[in-house]
Image 1 (cartoon, rainbow, N blue to C red):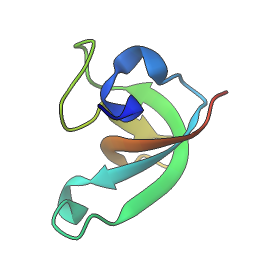
Image 2: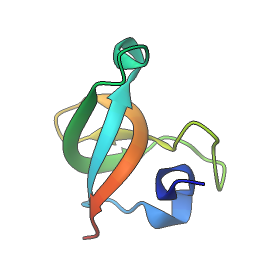
Image 3: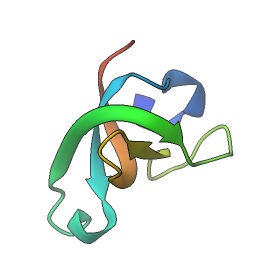
Image 4: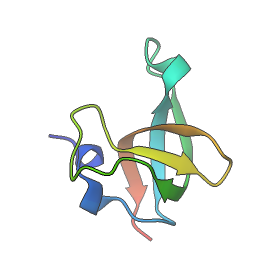
Length: 67
């Protein structure tokens, strides 16, 4: 299981790589800083949904750096 699928591994201010909904087919990743955690459950098989400081929303695929 990827670390991006477990909510407690992701913190506001952490740098992450997300895949946005419209990039799911291509798998294109977007890098950014977590502003809000949108998934309420402790884990999610496709990644925890977050909002970045830029306003972009997607599921965490990779945690780049812990804050």
